[in-house]
Length: 211
Image (tube, rainbow, N blue to C red; front, side, top):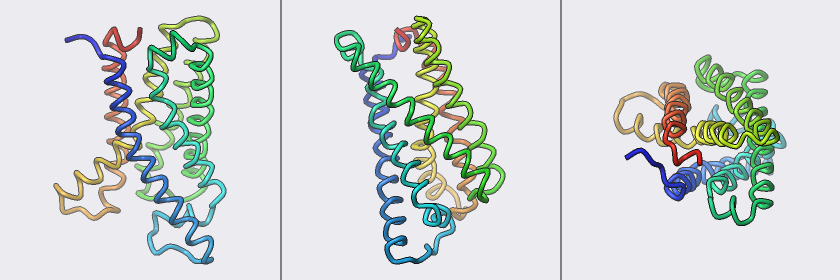
């Protein structure tokens, strides 16, 4: 079978996107509680978010908007019947993705990354890649290079959804290994994005996924 049905891709993205949206709400709730009580969290992974609540809300909020809108870009019905809505959704998702990716890179540069050099390097590499993907997708759309546009959209979206794959890998590592969270975090972080990057290339090569 050499096809990928758009509804299958949309359903998968919505499903795994809910993982990150749920985690996002949990993180925002943690930040809000500590800001309201003027306290610091006991977990190191939460510290930089609590110390920079405004940036955190923009970062997570943008990411959640992207997770909700991005799957709709693969809807043939919206694209063909309501092209104006398709463009509005696409531009909104693009701004949201670039915003959250840029903040991720800034935070990795400005503060010690939880998980050390591997987490930081993965953030630089895949955050930059996502920004490049959506920039090239936008440029291709402006130049009416539709097939090229779709390929870069697929890459950017699937790699961005690596944040959900990371959380799935957290569970795998916790169940299958004796490693502590701080030990497997950077491995899951890097692997989640890497696997999604490979998956994106596989999807791009399936003809119906880019039509």
